[in-house]
Length: 107
Image (cartoon, rainbow, N blue to C red; front, side, top):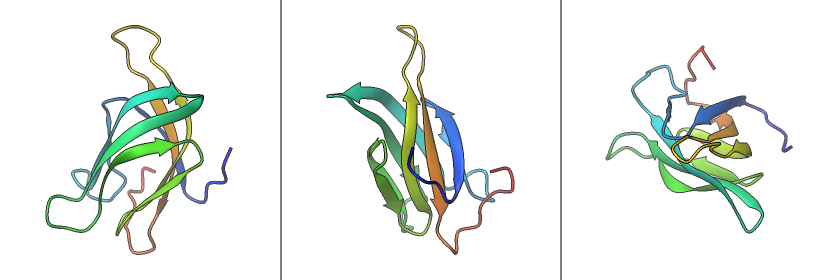
């Protein structure tokens, strides 16, 4: 498992992750958790509202860090795929905040 110098958290597919002191922004949604050609992935989208730097809409692959300007770096650590046709999977990732980003005390 890659080293994590931040917070490790697990988020269900379609759930929101809000790491900052403001619970409404920035927000991220995890979706499309799966395995393709042996590689585990999860889609991530979100960040600050329009017009503010710091937005991502991309796939996270296990061990590959993705930086979101002004917010921090996300590194996917593991996934759990849905166990039923209409179920949701989950993604476990490391969130390492940028030095100036104020993280919620609940993380």
